[in-house]
Each structure stands twice: as C-alpha cells, then as structure tokens.
Length: 427
Ligand SMILES: *Cc1c(COP(=O)(O)O)cnc(C)c1O
Image (cartoon, rainbow, N blue to C red):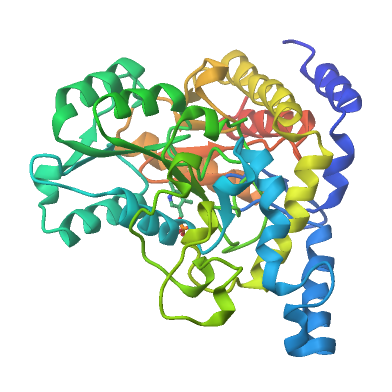
C-alpha cells in the first residue's frame, strides 16, 4: 500500500459515516484534536448526551416528584425508552433486554439465577486470562455455594501462538468437562487479545452438555453485529461505556433469553422487577415482570441512563451494526495492512488476522519476544504516542491496544498512528 495517504484521504472522503465524527466531543492535545483509539475503554461523548442529562435535571427542578409520571420521558418508565434500540443493537427481542445496574452487578444477578450447582455438576468454565472482575464474580459465586474454585473453576488455556484460543480447544474443554459443567461464561471479544468468538457455536456446545451458556459482551456490544436471541444464549451482560459511548459508569445491559423470561427462575428480587401492573399495590409477594425487566432491583438511575439514550439514537441513525461493521472491517484492515507492510520488525499483532475472529481492536506488542527489554520498549512507545496526542491503552504486561471506532475514527487517524510509530523507531 504505497499510496497509503491517497487511500486514506479517499476512504475518508467517501465514508458514509463521516458526519458522525462531528457529533462527538474530541479531547484536545495541545492545540489539536487527540487521535483517540480508546473507544474500547471509554467511548467519546456524543454531543447529544448533554441535552438528555439537562432534560432530566430540568424536569427534576420543575416538577420534582411529578417527574416520575409526566410526559414522554417520565422516570417511572425511563428505562423502557432504551429497550427497543438496545434490542436492535444486540439482536434480541425487546422483552429479552434491560438496561440496569453495572456490568459486574448484572453478572452476579445472572449467576444467582443461572448458576445452580448440584453435586456432580458444579463447575464453571471460563477462558484463562479472563477480565479480573469476571473471574472474581465466578470464583466468589462458586464459594458462595460451598464449592471449591480450585476444583470447580475450569480455565481454558490459549492454544494458539499469540495467546488466542481455537474453537477446537474450546470444544475439547467443554467435551472433557461436560458432565460436571454447570455453566460456561465466555466473552464476545477477549479484552486483552481482541479475539472474537462464535457465540452460537459455544452456546450450542455448552447446552449440548447440559450446561448454561452466558456471555460477557463488554467488548463486543457496539463493536460487532450480534444476534443474541438466535445464538440461543441463556443470558448475557455488557457495559455501555466502551463502544456504546454512554459515559463513565453508564448503566449496563442484560439479556435473558425469551425461554427463561416467564419460567419463574429463582432470582435476587427487588421491587422494580415486580410486575409494573401491580407494583404499587405494595403487596408483600413478589410477582416478577415478564422478561429481562423482571431482574431489575431498584428504580433506575435516570441521570445515568440519559446519555445512553443519545448514544443508542446514534447507532440507529448510523444504520445500525451492519453499517458500522462494514466501515470497521476496512478501518481495522487498513491498520493491519500498514503494520504488516511498514512496521513488521517493530510491532507484532496478537489479534487474529481473520476479520471474523476480531472486532475493531488490534492488540500490539513491540517485536522481539516477551523479555524485559521489549516490554520496556512497549511502554516507551505507548508513552511516546501519548505525548504526540495519540491515545491507545496499555495492558500489562506488554500489550498496546489500538481500537479505531467507526463512529468517530478516520482512515487518516490510522495512518497518523503508523507514521508516528515509524518516527519513534527512527526511520
Ligand atoms: C470492561 C469490563 C468489565 C468492567 O466491569 P464493570 O462492572 O463495568 O466495572 C468487566 N468485564 C469485562 C470483560 C470488561 O471488558
């Protein structure tokens, strides 16, 4: 790709999503816009978020308690304003999704309902190197039920050169432990390697062994097209502050498959999960609302939900995940091609090369193995980039993650990253 600059300019000029960049507030580095590749950690602020938050503050100021009941954005049903767009985003039926709590809280709530260990079937299978919060949640739930994580927490080790995990290895682990597996918890995208997984296949394998299939989609939602309902997953959880751009600590998401929505599963109950038709009779018996909403505990944090409305509106206006994914594959493909062509002795790509096995993110390591000196070089490069206004993120011990987000990143941003790495290397 010798004409990388011409290509980048042409791609940006022809990009149907180009106007969306102007809908985001982009932090400044010195006097120019930062080149921001950290949408996998905290997405940029959509300009529309502020108006939605102010609307809640104004309603509170002007109406106080009446704000629960008045107008199109009554707080009583505020969470329902995001129900349909959220269902579209994750490929679910509206009654299968709810925005509530935060990710790890939702994971615990789902484990409370779906991890029903019995003698002989008490194990949970996860990937080795899972995000610590997921591992803590799973391990503590195993202990809560009186089982021993050293026996009942099964971690599938990476079997591929870059620390990624083949479908064959996942299948083998599920088969090996099948009769003792109560639950399989798998990520849509592994946060460190950027590897994406075939969720339908994993759900099928788990369920064929009699285990529950749950997914953590923190890095997949807003990044990959998802078909949660069709995947057959029993449950899924995710957050909205990464690729969904709903702000720090945004209210998270939760999916419960339709087949469980009415089944009277045991749960950690609260009044907001009570059937709304009779909730305010304030009766002592708990009657769950149908679907995922039956897992709500408290009346929702409306101020924290407000930015999510703005963010989801953008996904709809952009044409949903198919449109975003079409650009994302090209954008990340451009990054990969430039690294291979111009930085092959400098950076190694850990993330799988097949587009179907990754999302927006490429996880990079400074070439030369995992010894102390290349690790130090990796950190040095990361700091150098930050000084020039290019923000990726650093994951111990030696990974730089770069995630071009199709709603606001440009092909020109990707080129700038590659040129700055060349400059650092001293070409
Ligand atoms: C980002 C992330 C989390 C963060 O959990 P919170 O409860 O939102 O703080 C947990 N798990 C995974 C896999 C993540 O990527």
